[in-house]
Structure formats: structure tokens, C-alpha cells
Image 1 (cartoon, rainbow, N blue to C red):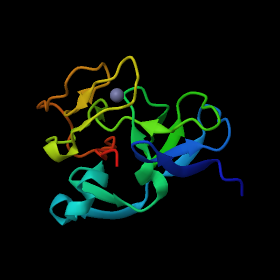
Image 2 (image 1 turned 30 degrees about the vertical axis):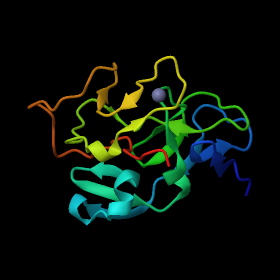
Image 3 (image 1 turned 90 degrees about the vertical axis):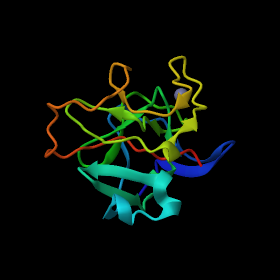
Amino acid sequence: METIIRVQNCFYGKCMVANRSLDIGTIVEKYEGLIVGWEEVPLNEICHVLLVSDKNWMIISTDARYINHSCDPNCIINDSLEVITTRPVKKDEELTVRYNIVHKNENPGAWDPRWSFRCLCGSSACQGHVNKYINEDGSEWKPSLDVNLNHNVINDTPIKIE
Ligand SMILES: [Zn+2]
């Protein structure tokens, strides 16, 4: 099978790039791994976990762990934890998701300061210091009383650039 992506070294660590041009809607990777409670996350994985549902965190075992953050990403994570392009991607372009976005009715809980990092995405909309959750409109996310805590939350990953 043709490999459409690869992990390589970028100037800030490992990253995932496209081996060829990709259409919008292409599945490029999938988040898989052990699901644990927050208190079971090993210290060295704190910055590499994905919140998959209320209080359940994934220790990512696939190459999805090398997908870096961008404030203007070219991929999203869908309900099946697949990484899908949201715009056409050029050959050798880096694949990114936004780690700290909170979608409607999601409640990710508190931001852990250990996830904070200085963003190097270079986008004109760059948040700079990524140190909090934000809403889709770019405003700071705050817990509200009317969120449904029982639905499956797909939270973008608080993984740090390595
Ligand atoms: Zn940025």
C-alpha cells in the first residue's frame, strides 16, 4: 500500500509530512493507544496524551503522536479519532492539528500548565503562547454549566511539540 505520510525530523523535533499532494478529506492517520484515567498517565506521556472522552485519556501508540500543533491547521480529528485533511495539502507539507480547540458542547476540563508551549506555526493567526483552551471563534474557553458531560468528547490534543 502506498504510504501517503511520513514522520521526519523538523527543526523543532519530529513532525509528520505528506509524501504526495493530498485532497481535502483524506484520512492520513488514526489515534490509537491505551485508554487510561488521568492519574494513570505516565509522567513522560503527560504532553502526548489525547482526551478521548470524559476523563479518559489515550496514550498514543501510532505515528499520530508526531502530528504537531498549528493555530491554522490543515487537519482535524474526527469522531473516530482519524486525522483528516481540511484543505488540499502539498507534497512535503507538514500535517497539523490544533491541540487546544474546544468544539461546541465539549468540556475538556482544566488546562494543565505542563502542556503550554511557545507556538512556532508561523500562521498570521498564531496564538503565540499556547497556554489555554480556546473556542472555535478564537475566544478563551471557559467551563459553563450547560455543557453535557456525558457525551463523547473529542478534544484536540494537548501534545507538546517535541
Ligand atoms: Zn501558532
